[in-house]
Image (cartoon, rainbow, N blue to C red):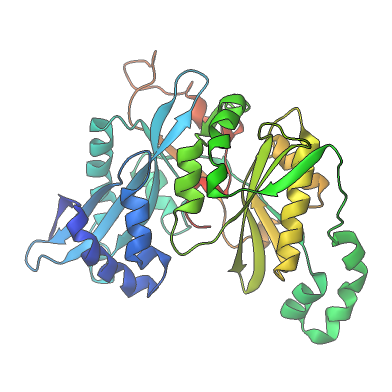
Length: 364
C-alpha cells in the first residue's frame, strides 16, 4: 500500500535513488540538473507528488510537472509540461501513475496553472489518454538532413556499401552562401538583453507560443547543467535589433552523431535571415563531425519552410525513434465554457495554432 505525499526539496536524494534504478547515472538522475529543472525555472517551481510506501516509507513513484509560461491571442497564461514520471519496478501495477496525477493537477489549479501538455513515450501514452483525460492533438514531424551520407551508410549498411553514398555528398553538402544583408553571430549570455525586445516584436507570429524572453532563454540554454548549446543570432549588417535566433546541440541519436536544432525562430519579414541562421548552424555541426541534423517543427510555420528549403526532409514514421505526439489537458474552464465543461473551442486543441520545437520539452 502507498499514499500520495507532496514533494519537498529535501526529498530530492530519495527520488534520485529511485531514478538510478532505471537510468543509472544520467541527466535525469543528476542532482544539479534536477535542481535546475525543479527549482530554478523562472516560471516557478515544479509541482510534484510522491508515492510513499505506508509500511517502509520508501518512495515508490513520482509524478512531475513544471510550469511553462505561454502567450495566447488574449492574455499570457501559465501551463505545465509533464515530465520525469516514474514508478519503482516493485510497485508497478498498483495505480501509482494515475493515482498521483490528480493530486498534482489539483495543486496546479491552486497555483493558477491552467493546463498541461506532454510528449509521452509509447509506454505512458495509453494511460494519459484512457485514464487521465488527455487529448491527442497531433504529432510534430521530425525533420532530418544528412551531413555525412557516407558515414551514415557505413554505420547502417557497412563499409563495403559506404561508397554508394558518395553521389549524395554534393546534394547534402553545406554550402556557405554569404548574404551581404545579414550578420550571423554567436549569442552569449551577455547578449540576452536583446531577447526581450525580440520577444515583444515576435510574440504574435503564432497564436500559441511558449514565452521566449531573456529569463527563459537564460534558464533553458545557459544555466542548464550537463548540456552545451550553440546559439546564434542574426541582425542586419551594420547593427540592428535581433531578427532571429537558432539553438543547436551536438548529441548521439540511435548511434549516430547528430546535430539537433533545438529552437529556431525568425522575424517573418526576414526569411532570408532564417536561411543564414540555419546555414551557420549546419556549418557548426559539420565542423563538429556530426553526421546528421534533425529538428522538430510544425508544418504550418515559416521555420518549417526554411528548413525544407535547406534540404531537410520529413522522417518516415517507420524510421522515427518514437512518435512525437503532443497531448493536452485543460485544468480550468475557458471563459464562456458551458457548464458541462465543453472545451471544443479551446485553441490549444488545434495543433496548427501552436509553435513547438525541441526546446519546448526536456529531452534534448
